[in-house]
Structure formats: C-alpha cells, structure tokens
Length: 166
Ligand SMILES: [Zn+2]
Image (cartoon, rainbow, N blue to C red; front, side):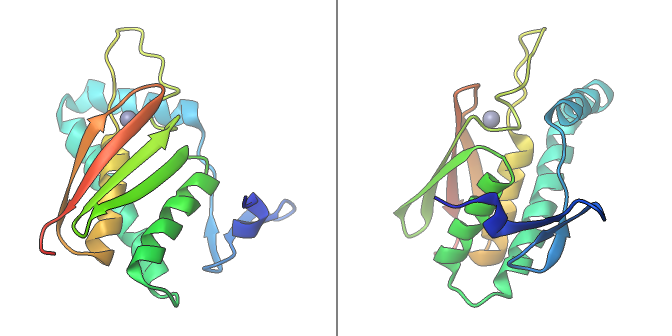
C-alpha cells in the first residue's frame, strides 16, 4: 500500500506540489471542471473532440514517459510505475497485465475521466484522453502501438494495448 506522500510533497504555504521521484512540479485538476471542459469540446468540435482529447492525452503520456525514462529502471517497471503514479493522481484503480510480449490489458476501476460523468443526454463520453495517455506511455517505452477501449463505463474502463513491432 503506497501513500500519496510517497509520490508527492505538498508545500501548502507556497502552493507547490512536487513529484518526489522526478523532483518536478505537479498540480491537481478538478473532475467537474474537466467534465464540463470535455462536454464543451464536443459541443464545439463534434466528433473532432475525440481527436483533440486523444492527442492531448498522447502528448501528456509521451512527456510523462520521457521523464520516467530518465530514471534507473526497465520498461516493464517504468510502465507499471507510470500507472501507479496515475493512481496516486486519483485517476482510478489501475490494473495492468501483460498478456503477450506485444499485448497489454489495462483495466481502470472508477476511471476519473468517465465514472463521474453525469450524462443527462445519455451520451457517454468514452476515455479518449486516457486512451491517448496509454498510447503515449507505450510510444516512448515500447514504440508504435494501438490502443483500443474495450469497455467504458461508470464501473470500469478497459483497454487493449497492442505494440506494433515486437
Ligand atoms: Zn472510459
């Protein structure tokens, strides 16, 4: 069982949160503002919002993985650590399993990006952002890949990550 203090140092006086492992700043993002941001993107850009969210997630994932790559570790540990870090950031309970050398299954219980979404119009907003993040992690650690969301819902979200050239 890990505690949030293992990952982050919080300086309340200065308004600074630091990721201890990397010595870099981090910040907390509210779920409701995030959700309304996502809805506004769909209102404004229609299905184009899917690409915007996926690409935003992908660049976020690439950048996070590049930071992680500078640490002493191997890629299997690194990808697990990135998901643990996501858990410590409140993204949900993440379970990763490597089914085959080129195939990962990632399950996120109570995924923060969609389990809190109240959709009055019954329209579900799948995890385009999170799919992008997973793809970005894998891009840096394993190379080109495809992420498919198998299930998206209030209970859990499940992804299949297939690495292209292994
Ligand atoms: Zn989802």
